[in-house]
Image (tube, rainbow, N blue to C red; front, side):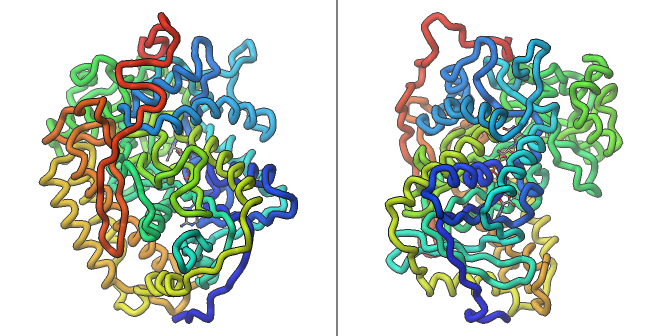
Length: 587
Ligand SMILES: Cc1cc2nc3c(=O)[nH]c(=O)nc-3n(C[C@H](O)[C@H](O)[C@H](O)COP(=O)(O)OP(=O)(O)OC[C@H]3O[C@@H](n4cnc5c(N)ncnc54)[C@H](O)[C@@H]3O)c2cc1C
């Protein structure tokens, strides 16, 4: 078993966790804004450019550059879509800065998005939006963004710690500031502690504790679990977004759960039930173009009605739009479905709601600062910008906008910071002991625990919730957690010890799952992604509250805080007088 003496210690000025849109933009902007000679280190669980969800972005990037669109319109759609829960200052900055960031992506980073024949950017229709605003590169937008960002970052003199898994945020002894981050170097299994004046956490959330899920496998809520242990406040933790159309290709394939993009419904795709009938208009007069939460519930309700173990999901059908047209417009999707035996262009594809995005996250200010000095959070790890529902296209906008903001802010703040801070050695040792815990136990079956957790979250803390269900969910999670703590890992070789990393993944997932269920119990109404069958009404918009979870010792408490309507109040709009609320997408 490694001893404390085996920790490698290492110093930097700016440390960035994760290399998705948030991490890579933070690195580029920090380099532009920090004083010359500032050392910047990027540390990531996977390989730069090959991990995380930004790479997986299919549909596109929301930016108010299309005809008839405006930052005000984008902002109103974000607030209304988030059911009045977003932090309005963050939502505004997201919409305003997306315009700057898309220009930066094209003019400085080298991305090239699809265009109209006259040379203007092409904007797709996405559900829940009153204008066509989603720019894209076919349906493989994320690959374009990450490849170009990766080229920029790799060509610069930043230090790169790849296959380094962050396992603990370690404060100073008096708890007033962050000292640095503890890692496992996955290539050797050794611990490494990196002191830094500023740390940007962009580990990308990732609700992979659900039976059907879309995010990349490296994402297991490590960042939010670390933030909880540090005692930071986390908001909107009940808000798990289900994408309505996850591919259902059977239990034997990891393709099950992967997302069939929103643009399919935006382009006119129809959802059919087991009898072949279109059903979404029974649930919402926008039909298939309703927001993700509404469509997910529609599909889930039809699944419950059908209740047939041999045919679990519903179907998406595109053939009426012309198979050649579908093949041309959705090349990647058609191929993905064909790989799993479905003909998206001319036939129908079985789909199921799939956990896609986590709106909850660390409480930050619009400049990405957190409650503790030295720690900044951006991207999917940060709560607030989306409230109860993220609009399709606002995810990658959020991570790239706020990653850049974090880089700028750290570069400025670091000018006023003194020397590196020493860690609380007791907390550092406790984090190491926590990670080594399975070494002292008898080996067990971690994969079966993961399946149990995924079933419990899908059944009891999923698309539709009740008090009884979530309480049952909490009991199931608690049993799984207890079993995990008694499950061991063979520590004879720690280099790329994937069983150990599965154990650590499960530890983060169970910690955060518990908080999702607790926050879900505290929200006694239905807003956006959180739907309570026992409290189906949204409640009074004027007195909207968001939940805040905080850990003290081993206990997590959840409270409610009033939403501040800093820009617009329910019933009002920031759109110019006389401008229609509905433009293209919902027409
Ligand atoms: C299939 C799919 C399609 C999507 N399509 C769209 C779309 O069309 N439009 C849109 O707006 N959004 C889309 N999204 C959402 C979008 O991808 C995310 O909102 C956004 O990319 C998140 O960026 P991020 O930088 O916060 O995290 P990510 O890009 O996920 O990056 C997280 C990084 O953190 C690293 N990491 C994780 N844990 C640790 C750890 N313990 N230590 C060190 N590093 C760690 C990961 O390896 C990774 O590098 C999609 C998501 C998925 C899954």
